[in-house]
Structures are given as C-alpha cells and as structure tokens.
Length: 495
Image (cartoon, rainbow, N blue to C red; front, side):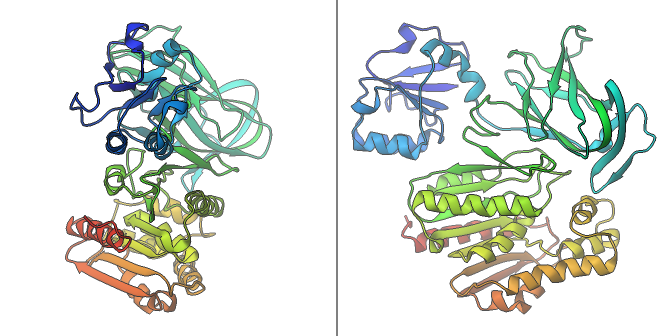
C-alpha cells in the first residue's frame, strides 16, 4: 500500500514500517504516484494551494490522518482538504498507528453471506423455513450446537474477518458462533477455535486472529442456550477494517432493531458542492458498495447504499429500514447545507425501487434510473414462466411484504405502491428512465409510470427503451451514466 507523509520529520527514520507499506515522505507530486491509500499529515507540513486541491482526488475520503498540532500549520487550502476528506485526528502513538495501517486502509471490499438453509442442523425436527428465515424451537439448558454451515469461509491473505448474524427471538435465548480456523490444505490445530458471542442481534464480531500471507479457511457452527423460539436469518462474513468502516473506510450501517438486518451506507463528501447524488446498489452476489468509482470521478458529494440481505438483496424494503434510509438522506443534505432541489436519487435494477419510492417522497431535483423494477408482485407472478429457477429470492422478499403469496395479494402489493406514488408531489422533479423493451423481470414498470398521475406531473419525464431482456444490453447503463453528466452540467459542472 502507498502511504504519503507530509511534515517536517520523516516517521520512517524513527519508526518501523511494515514491509507491505511503500512510505513516501514529502515526495508529492514528484513521486508521480496516481493514487495513495493513505495520507498522514504531521507538524510542519508545507504544500502549495493547488497541490492540496490536486491531492484531494488521489486519496479516498476517510483515508487522511493528521497529528493534533498539524492543523495549526495548514493554510486555507489544507484545512479545506481535511474537511473534504473527512480526515481523522491521530490519537494513537505513531508506531501503534503504523502497525494498524495494513488492517485499516487496504484497497478493495468484500463480504459473503450464508443463508440459514445452508445450516446443516443436528436436530431438524420442528424447524421450517419461511421468507428466507429459519425458525426453531429451542430447549437448551446448556450451550448446544445447532449445526454447521455447509460451506467454509475463505480467509484472504492479509485480511481479517468479522461476522454478523441476523436473528430474532421471543425469549431470552443466547446465541454464539464457534469458528474453527485451519490453513489452506491442512487439518489445522484444535486450539484454533474461537467463540463469538452475539448477545445482541445487531453486533459484529471480529475473528481474533492475526494477518497471514497464506489463505485460511474457517468452519462455522451456531450454538444456543435457553428456551423459546428463535428465528435465524443470514450470516455475514466481511473483511474487517476494525473501527474504520464497513466495506470501505468511512462506511457505516443502518440496522433494523428487531432482527439485526443491516443496510450499509457510504458518504463521499466530494467537493462539498451541489448536487448530492444518492445511489442504491443493484442486486449483488458479493457484498459491498457499487459505483464507487463512477461517483468518485464526478467529484460531487455522493451517498451510496447497498442491501446485503437475503441471497442478492431485498430491494431496500422494510418500514424500519426505509425510514432510516430516508432520515440518513435528509441528515446528509442538512450537513451539506443543501435543499431538496440539490438532491438526485439514482438506481439501477434493484436500486430503482428505493430511488423511485423514496425519491417521490423527497421531491428531489431529479430521479435517474435504469431497468426499473418496482412491481415486486408482478416479478413474482412472472417467475414460473418467464424466469424459472433464476430469481426465486423474489418469493422470500414478497413473503415479508404480504401475508401470503396469492395472486390477489401480489397484485395488491403493486397497487399499494402506485397508490402511494400518487400521493406525492413531483412537480419540481425531473425523471429519467432507461428501460428494456423485453424486460423479463418487471415488464409493467414503464406502463405504470406512464399511467401514474404524480409521475406524469413531473417537471420533466424522459424515457428511452433498449431492445432485449433485463440484462441483455449494457447500453441502458451507459444511457444512465450520460444522464448523470447531463444533471451535473445543469449544476454548472460541465468541463
């Protein structure tokens, strides 16, 4: 990893630098490095105004640290730099901090999930799966092993793992994970077992192991103590940055209080000038944020959300989750000093559902979507003939929104969505929709939008159709990106 230190004294002369760190001291911009993983600002820093502005786009937000007394040495451009980068003040001793850098500021993001159906139960009697969850009747006077997950967790070289487990209960049941770590291709040592206590269902627990150059594997089992009913959801295993962020440095979580489901989000301050772009990631196999580079290149403030629930995501549904997402957007606008005419909501595929639904409630400057998928009942109704065995997760999603999966209730689910849309004011909002003419998920999205009175009263409604099914033609995504440029130009951001 590339670290740039700016200041009067070179830490590399005084402290031990790990081998995986390339330490650059006061070499900016002479070193010619296009991207730094971290910038450390210490006392006596000197950098020209234009270089602060240039450096801002060569290091990610939240990846700038500064010594407590370095701030007094910064000029106005330097102070603006640490503000835009959401820089953290250093509170650790330098050597302790340096030792933690590879854990906190590595490149990339990753996370995987394990459905409760992948748990091989020791005693399957009295259990059932419903809506993507596993409900069990627990009677355990001592810690009892429920079973192990079928698939081991891969631990990447030079990465740490943390786990979170979704569950809810109707009595005082304690839950923990037993994790056994073994080397790649080896049986391991029986001492390499770790107990992770999930006394609350919204906790994350890091696997207490050190970094290693070789890959490892972890087998995971669930243990319980107590009596009552327990409903297990998804188990998540994610790269850990300690307390420096979810997936990316600076990432955070919204958590449903009842079952511990989470929606991670990431705010990139950009240049702190309008507009604020909100983007909802589409369905993802691997967990993490989507379109980080796209919105980073725009230099606008951006708020990214991702839905890691169920197999591919859950369309950001759920009253508690939707409310928290909406509040986060409003708080971010207030932090930036923006009004709602300086807000843009964006989404592709699964991300179009919250972009349209929450966008209508917030009356933003623009809603920009591609491959709209909002009639969740219709997607389920088409599944048997249009996408057999390809998107069965829609039944788990809808099962949490309706009492039963009957045609009548699925149709009513979509009617409720459009009735809610009709209650909103979009007269100040511009709506851009790129859609697939032969979409095999939601073939009614465009028809319903054209019939919806609130959408038709929008200040501008622009749509463009592309031949093919849902994932047949990347041109629709390129059209979406072009609309981003058009919107940014309206805010004076043209080249």
